[in-house]
Amino acid sequence: MESNLFSLSGKTALVTGGSRGIGLAITKGLAEHGADVAIAARSKDQLEVAARQIHADTGRKIRPFPFDLKDIEGIDEFFKSVIAETKGIDILVNCAGTTIRGPAEDVDLKTWNQVIEVNLTSAFVLSQAFCRHRKKTGKAGRIINIGSLTCHGARPTTAAYASSKGGLLMLTKTLAVEWAKYKINVNAIGPGYITTELTEPLWTNEDFNKWVLSKTPLAMWGKPEDLVGTTILLASRAGDFITGQIIYVDGGWLALL
Image (cartoon, rainbow, N blue to C red; front, side, top):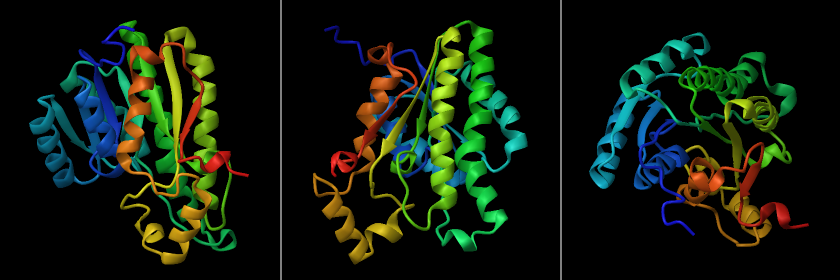
């Protein structure tokens, strides 16, 4: 097997939600495999800290782009600014996400729209911009959407989140079919229960923690770094013949009856 099959040398990636959690781990992993990375998130300070640290660790160019993905109308201009500075994006990782938990009957429309817009609509609009960019360059591209176990099933209090992630899976499949002619591979990763700031209310809850461990064959929570290997597979030449798929990185969760 070629030693450079997983190399991302000469590639540039854009990672949303790239300043912390899963997005931060993916950004570092992409850089460690040779890619320069543009990272987007709301907090300028967190972005700059992440960019400095990853650059120091890997030597790659890590460019911070403060942007709130709730600003759907501003995504096109945001993407143009990224292209202007990087001269081109080869890999798009839609990782930014949010959730607001509560009984479905109590979820107000503002909450519903906020979760759908950040988790699904922004990924669609950003993917559109990426596709137009790749068509213009005439070069292949990779889109990797960060899904969830709720792409496959649901649990109480997650109506908006599960709907957004289920939609993201079908968006992945649809874009993979439609954009194959442009040599754009579109895939998703479905994390299991991962210890991040977003999931802190869950893994610090003793009862919920016991439930997760009992349902996970590996009897452990995942770490953000556990998503890196699959990301590199889908972003590199090793994933040339993979499109329209979701790969669950869940410690065996979905395999357990």
